[in-house]
View 1 (tube, rainbow, N blue to C red):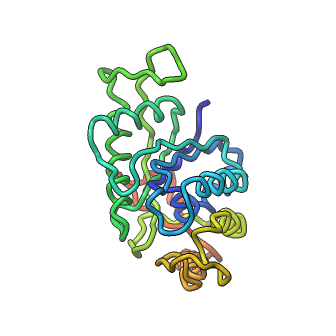
View 2 (cartoon, rainbow, N blue to C red):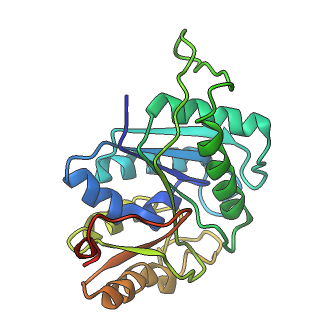
Length: 240
């Protein structure tokens, strides 16, 4: 299945937190969107890999994603080496996305920056015709494919965005998809250990950070991204 957008996260819930409203808006506009999780989040303090699997499936349905897959790389130990790159190249060539959205270039969790660079490198290498790959579900050799753009969402750290997407009207879907991960986020009845993302402050921050980015671009809500190359427009009015 060819996708317009492939959103990739080191852990289940990264995509929802980083660009959930953007994906919901693009899906509402008719774009085909897929989600690829690199790990099952097995080192997470709260919940289990099995609960995260179920939560990820529920969140994907809420957003309307066409497909969601998990690479089952080792949580906490993502490595940007040939093996990991080749496995990602197979998925990029399988889905042939025009745009890839992935983890923040720098963040509190060590997997985020590592995943960011791994995905970026795999997207470049995927366009080289002398790298031969076959996906396990297909007999044919894959064609080379390089996405037109790679964008990085913003996570824990307040990285200054290069582009802000107006997501007014889609925050409710994003928040519903995020809260599908009920094992991870604020629940006053939970007896699980506290984590940096299980506080009410963190849950509240999802909305107020989006409101702040929206304020800066003159809308109610926004989601920010950093880019790897200069954005190009046909008219200055495209920036309004």
